[in-house]
Image (tube, rainbow, N blue to C red):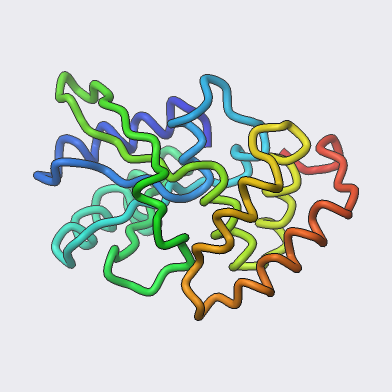
Length: 184
């Protein structure tokens, strides 16, 4: 997802929601930390947004979800996640988050972006190939280091098998995934 696509989704969310803040927790959270995000984040055409109620989930899905007109027109969408769900996030992720106020359609919006280390821990807990490649990319580009990720892994809920996530980190660090070999 390109920055202009990301901002278009945030504009729509700001205009349609009475929520005081928007939580961005997937790979697009890198927009909260970096001026230029790595091309690997372009592989995803979704922005993961945490919400606190069913009504907001329905609004997001209707306006900018995967079955919306927005998706068919722009090729990207927002995926609403219930904040009350058992997600594979470090327990202190909100403390580590990057908080910024962005102007969206002349509306100041508080955006809360998951930190790169917490994002990596979450992706390692998921263990999908695309997530491992993403973490490898962030390590190679020195956006995050393995020590920071280890700290975040230690704060994952027990259910997500911290030892499995640590194993996945070891695997990622030892693999050689050339950034140029990834399809963009």
